[in-house]
Length: 538
Image 1 (cartoon, rainbow, N blue to C red):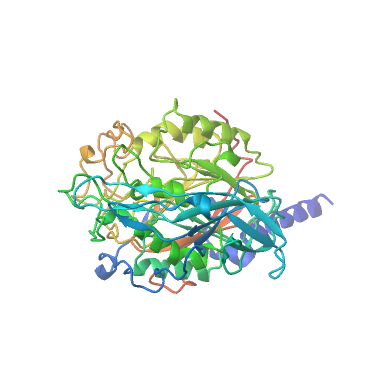
Image 2 (image 1 turned 90 degrees about the vertical axis):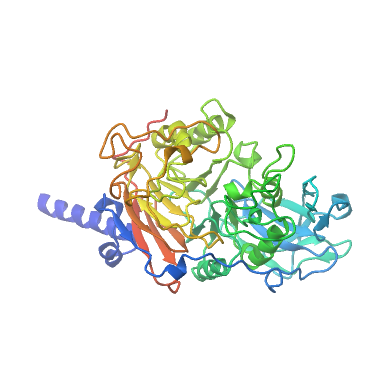
């Protein structure tokens, strides 16, 4: 009887592992983190044509022109609240204005109303919200000011989880209502409930490469989209609409770094068919900063998107959290203070302490600039943020970290403080959405490509990118070969899909733009081991 008991136990264990992967065949075909750490792999860019400057969509492209009249809604999007019973609906009414003597539209003249329900032709429920107008002001000769249309945000509450809802937004008294759209709420939080597919992309911009990324992403039928910063690249343009190929070489003789705000309107019109039905969650990037006179920054980013700030105990659009089934997402700001004495760090500590891993086993963190990237571009650029926050995230058992910023793809082994650690998170860089800046192809460990440490100052001030004091790169700023924490890197535009299968297994797939959406560039099962990696709150 003892032998039979042992055999049955082993069989049940094997079945459990196979089911975690999605079947025994899937387990055998796709590697998992249990097989790691993996030897570093680099896929070189064979076709230099793919590296060239991506071409932006012109303002005459039918996908970005204004297709409504008067105060009819446009640029419609859905985003999540902190929990499954609530979402935000956002849209714009009225057109933007450009010039030096412009009068902003009055938000009070257009109501913010959403009619919604479970039946397309019976939208019996109603919610109201708030509206605003923002301006981008440049009081210099020859520059044009901008004021937006009226931006509306309405929160729908009391929703059922995993349920399809139909909605129309606008002001029925004008009348100016949108056509009918639909969205699906997230599953209720619990260890058995997960969105089927989550699309993750960074640094999108509005180029022909962007259109390929979004088309491929939609073909994978995601339930949720995470955008890891740098949405529009409007700051690569002068206020007269003249463009440049990169941020750092743009317009050195102008008194301030300019931005052409209509690119935000073009981007939102292009994205509307996707994000009016698939919720999108956004974090800020450096190209979203757009400084104005007086030090105002991130006006477009903070005004145009809806964020579950209050719902998640935050008071900032730069950091917040939300749940999607059994996943707790932490969205952090790399361009606001992250020191231990700052508000973001204090909020993060409270938020992590509130996570019940019995209800949301998966803990995923995102921000724009990566801590672990081996490309020359932006190498160790946010080392101060890593120094301040890494120990806290590690102690609470963050499973995966997603970043953008570097215009290439890279996946790490489990790493903490530049050391392989079986209980550390996987870091994945997907800053390859398709923007107009060139693709990153050179690595800091390539001969002659290690950047001067003085050229990598932290965006928030200070300097932390010192030479390594131990390990294979001791005494150096860069490694002499691909670091062992870097498992896979490839220069290509694309996007990723995360499929959380259960409380321990998640399938990560990265898709290149050069391939059809069914072709896979990189794939891995990420396996949690809570029994081996206990949470040690700091």
